[in-house]
Picture 1 (tube, rainbow, N blue to C red):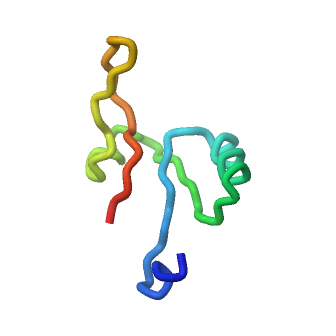
Picture 2 (cartoon, helix red, strand yellow):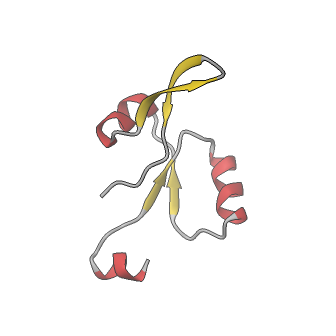
Length: 70
């Protein structure tokens, strides 16, 4: 985080989960970064290449894929 701060970068986690879920996740992992939820996940995530087709137990659906973006 210090290296990002030196570069003037802001680190933000984006997830479609609820604010309560974010708080629990931040506490569990002792995170200090902000977590936010886009109001329209499919629209907000597409430019970040995080909105992808996924598959579970043969069922295909659209969802957010965990990734790190510059």
